[in-house]
Image (cartoon, rainbow, N blue to C red; front, side, top):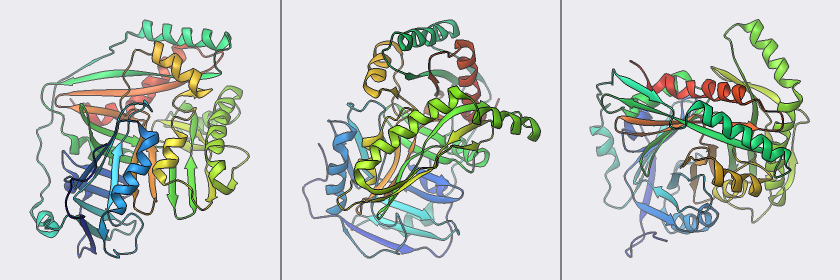
Length: 416
C-alpha cells in the first residue's frame, strides 16, 4: 500500500468563499466532481494517493489512517468540508483499489454557498481558484457506434444465464453490455458532465480520473451514506421505460409496482442491503413496499432504507465495501452470480456498477452505484448498461432495456 510520503504531516485549511464557484470549472478535464441538485464538491491535485492491492474490503482502514494523519483546522462545520478521500472503485472486489486526497477541494451547499479546503502547507488555493476559467472545447461532430458483443451473442448470454438459474446455480444475475462510441476528435469531459447535470439534476453526477480514462456517470442509486450515527441507502431494482405522456407513464408505473418479477427482483436487493447494514445498526427502517423513482427516460422501483449506527460501525467507505455488489448490480446469491459473470460475461467492467464517492476523517461520506456511466479516453467512450436476469427473462426484452438505459449517456456524449 502506498500512502503519504515520509515527511511532515500534511496540513488542511478550510474557509468559506465570498463568491459561489462552478464546480465543473474547478474539476476541469482531470479532476473529481460530485454534484446533485446543485450541491456537492469538486477537487483537483493530489495531496495523497492511497493504493490498496487487497481490494476495496481493505481500503477503509488504509484511507482512515491517511485522513487522520492530516492536521486539519476546525473547518466551517459543514458535512464534507475538510480533507476527503475520493475514488471510483473497481467492480471487482479483489482488484487493487485506489483513492486520492485532492490538494484542493471546493464544496457547495444546497443554498449555493461555497467553501475551500486546501491540503498542503504550500498550496495557495485562493490564487488557484482566481486563475481558473471554464475550459473551451471543440465538440466532435462525427461519431460511430458499435457493440463489441453483437446483439445475437449478447442475447445468447442472457439465455445461458436463464438456463443457469433453472439449473439452480443462482436466483438472479445482472448481465451488462457495453457500447463503444468513437468520435472524430477528443470528447470533452466537462462538456459531457455539464450535459449530464442539465439532463439529470436529481441524479448524482460524478466525474473521476480512472485507469484508462475519465469515469463519468449520472447515478440514480445511493449505495450508502453515513453522517454521524445516521446511515441511509436507496437501492433500485426493477425498470420500465417512460413514454413522456403523463397518463401512459402512470399506467406503466402501476404495472411496475404490481409486476411479480420486478417486485421479487427488488426484494432481493433490499434484502442484501438490510443484511449488510443490520450488524452495524441499532435500528433500521425499511418501508414495506417500494416506491417509483422516475428519471428522464426510465422509472425504477426504489426503497429508502435508513438506520442508526452503533458505536464502532465502519466508515462510509467500509459500509460501501460491505454492501458491494448488491443484487442490483451483481446477483443473488452473490458469490455464485459473480463466479458465473467472471466466466461468461466477456466484459471488463472497471468502475461500472461499482462504488464511487467520498469519505472524510470522521468516517462520514456518500457512495453511489456507478451506473448510467461511461469511461472517456480521448475520442473514445465506453458506455455501459446492465439488466437483472431471472427465471423467465426474455433476451430481446432485456436487450431493449439496456438500450433505454444507454440513452442516458448517449444523450450527453453523442451530439453530431
